Amino acid sequence: MFGPAPVGRDRAIGMSERLAAVSSLQSSLEYLTQRRDIEKGGMNDWEVARQYLAGAGPLTRRLVDSVSGVRTTTALHVARSAVALGMLLPGDSRWRGAGNVFLGASSALLSPRHHYGGDGSDQVATLVQLATGAARLVPSPAAKDALVWYAALQANMAYAISGWVKLFGEPWRDASALGGVMRTRTYGHEGMHRWTQEHPRTAKLLTHSVLALECSFPLVYAGGGRLTRSMITSAAAFHVANGYFMGLSRFVTAFPAFHPLVAYTAAPRSHPTVAGRDDRALTAAAVALAGGTLAAAATAVRRRLRTTEGWHTSRTLTTRSKNRLQYEEYSPGDPQQPVVVLVNGLLSTSEHYAWIAERLCYETRYGVITYARAGYAGSHRHATTGFRLSESVQDLVDLVNGAVAPNRKVILVGHSIGGELARRAARHLGDRLQGIVYLDSSHPGQFASGLGASEKGLAGNLSTVGRALRLGTGILLNRPVWIGELPYAYRKKAFAQYADARMWEAARREWKAIRADFRSFTGALARIEGIPALVVSAQRTVDRNPEQLLLHKELAEAHTGARTETVVIEGATHETMLITSRYANQVTDRVIAFFDSLGANSPTTQAASSSHPSSPSRPVGRKETVR
Image 1: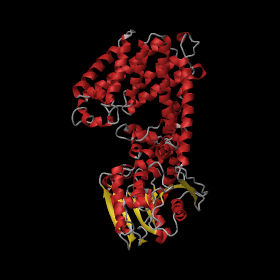
Image 2: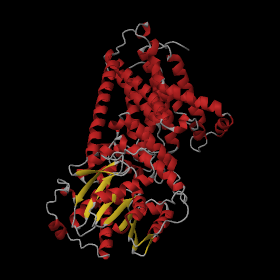
Image 3: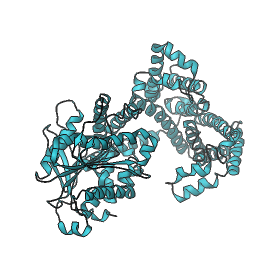
């Protein structure tokens, strides 16, 4: 059990390609026996599933479309089954390379077709088949070894990264994950779940043993491969258990298809079985890893600088809690008109308000201010006490008193938790308030109403992503689709914040305080006398949780002795009501119309432009983003 598992290159390739072929054969036979899933109305009806390729290039869409008809898909799986059976026969010819490439390429081509039902085993089999197929076809021994090393390094990453990512999750650290998985209908096993509950200590030992195996898998290369046999045997046993208890039978052969390639590369070069092995691919991988690490670090630094520097018009203000807030005055507006202060939601940037802020700036005579809460963008938290929501409320009040002239009224516009902060700030601002606009606002009673069911999952996600970003993994983040909905000039700044750990850490801190605060809420909302309120809800939010609409009505009813109005933006979601121009424009229209009806402003583009035609406070260079 302790020692290298020397295996020659050709034998390693042969063993791996046969194990991968078994996985492909089983996969195709499963799809053939479940053809109803790909027919019209099935789980993988292509007329529905093709939407997942909407963002792909035209060539990719055409290629996948060409094989996604029911007859073509069926014919491909029949051909894959025949080729996979042929790969199980004895032989060592280059034709086997062509068979491997066909299986790997067809699997990759069909993967969008089987959006539901594909899993990690299909991806692993595809990777092994393409690597071993190319190794069969290339004539150079050095190129063969490079391809084998590629697959072996992928195997190490598959295990190690999976293990280290699990460590970010509390259920794996406290060993509740195993029992949690075993109690699910999809991957569970009633007997195994019962065993985890009856033997918690043994279950914890088993869970942590699996973690240790995955995290330390690269140790197969330590000490001349002394741990190769024990590591590979343990990993194979793990996949057999997955196949039996979780029903993931393809895992039994797919992941072990890596193992012969790992054994070949882990054996010491002095062993006669691997004599002449070319290990330059390992050096190249190490250099690439070092270069990637440096690039990740440089990217993280660049994004941090972009995040904290603000715009060229940004200003700072220190609050009573010693927090330094970064804010921006889009427009000073008419001195006789109110100033709109925009308060962002949880894990969102002030750039989320770009469409609304730009229109208010150019089409009304209001002053417009956005700001970043402590920990977001260029704002820094220096408070020494434990964070509570009251700290953010005080910061908002201090911002208003410090950034807005004492003789001017203020309109607070808050999205999500920003709406709750605005509501709480009302009693501190008193008659300085012209009104409050709640945009799909949070409500302190939402947990009691059953709307906080996913609160623990959100807390875990915030912690996990924050830790990962601190390790420099932001370079791996794809730009979210919603970034492209913002005006062009704001996208880089918003993405830099999204890919930086600071915002996630601030959101985690805020979410912890929100949970504690909202859970303690009892009774009715405090009355706000004489302050008008506009409550705007996103249709998708209230459709998903009808209780949310009742909570939003409570927000309006809490404002007594003044005009209130409730509005639902048709088709909008919690986020798109800000970041998608057509919904943001509807929101802005409602805001302008509401305060117009109160006699607060007479917004015309001509009047607004003439009132401050060349204001140095407005962010120059972003005017072209207005639609």
